[in-house]
Length: 238
Image (cartoon, rainbow, N blue to C red; front, side, top):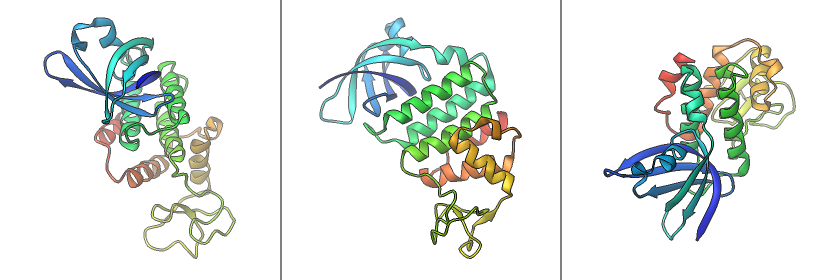
């Protein structure tokens, strides 16, 4: 089946002397893993398939999980724009790794693609601090995948209220009666910032709070069931 779609390159691997394998989050077909023959000899196609770039692709999808990449044309050179600013580039790499680890082959909604596109564009244009973009992206792409935390009702008993204990195991904010085990308490301001990041309400994310960033990191790692390779190094730099 021939597929034409736009996408953002999440990761690439060399394959022999001239070939390559690419992980691409597409707009309409989810995450695609594709092999391209002779791409290292094709300068334009190689540039279009470089990590973090947004391009238009033509694939041939067979019976297996690995598609064949036939063509690539550059739409948005995010990789080049981000490479001039180290914190922004590292943030983009972390978001790409999150999407790659979260989504299975041919899985992912258009909303996930639009989230990544918007986040990369915001980083490239220096619209706000990288930590805001990364934390918000991670929370929102997990929500797209079905793992949105409970915010204003207890994740355990369902009682409505504005609670300040967070439990990874129970799936969000919990009341004091249900806050057992490893649930941690946060301040009202910290919860407000967490909710603002999830909703993309930038005006309520004025001050950086490392405890909130740590909570976001723990939430992502818990549902990915693995630690991101780049996360420890990257979060210290952004």
